[in-house]
Length: 470
Image (cartoon, rainbow, N blue to C red; front, side, top):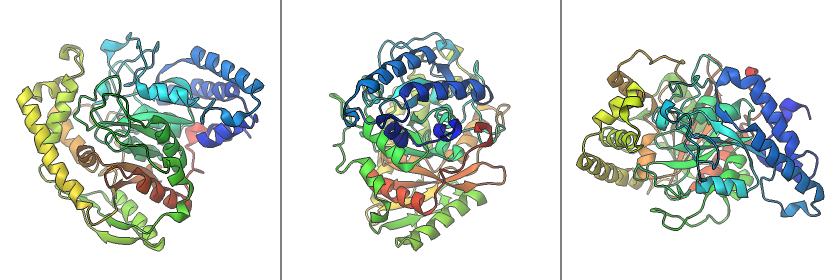
């Protein structure tokens, strides 16, 4: 297998090759480190590359593999390289949160999700780019190069998991960890032609810290295949003592749900190309939904138009989001203009609690819509990715309105806590991927994963690779 093909080989297949001793962890890590050195200066997908630590870990795992008699007993992703978003602590590694003020911050402990990733056998290559404090849907933090879309370098890979998505799409890691508080996994996945899962609330622990956003945020995977994303979600999931929300482990596993797409049961599917109160998505995003709906009908599912009522959500959701920026505890004087303005708009603790209550009331009606359907198909974003720096000269007020009008289909399901998966469907005239999202009932990741795997089997996309990656 040539190096490019190996770099784009799914993470589960890489794990199989390692267990079969057809390739070593050291070879995989060196492959990706070489590619990062050769390509990432164009992309800015990594803030920090921990080459020495990754090589040390890979050498130890290669030695372990050499002496292993029964490799089936190795962890599921033994020797597979992964990237971690730079909002997530990895002990001994710089964690900037995308802020110039934290350029020299070294984490002293692992987030529990990082511990699970290490226990699964992954090798961490580094920390991926994020906007300052993860607050924006594009990744252009001051003091860092902007993260660029591998499919067209003039455009953003999205945010806030923009670096994570770019790193996977360009073949600079096998798979990535991200997070989503308003579309921050699903948006970058759609921008970069990947699969991204926002898990249900309570599925993945934020231990040992709190999420600061009253349950809006979720940690989740970005991958090139549905099965890879599902398998990483299996790794990341699980209750930790003291978590404010919790769910039981799925039976069967998420990977099992992805493994048998032809067995996906007939579902009742609602779809929409209109997101109230924002109106219709652009023509490209509408077409992606309609083509998906047609394919779902051909696959035997019952399809009908429909959408929950999101009226009244924008204002209280924005208030919680603004409060989350202030909760980071960084003096506003050292932050970028947009984040300083967001903090100033956040209001009092009472304003925050009132906003939380309003979000929860609206979330009840969103979840109730699913009483009569199994899944909802809708655009991930209202229009295709913006150019790098496209909004740089706008005022904060203007930028906020642009953001709301772009990412509108995502936040409602952070509010409701429902699981959602973004999958690619094709390309636009600028060579940029197009994607849609599938939203499931509460805690029903297995349903949306099985349906996404069925769509993937009917219309494969893994064969596509951006030119910059070759």
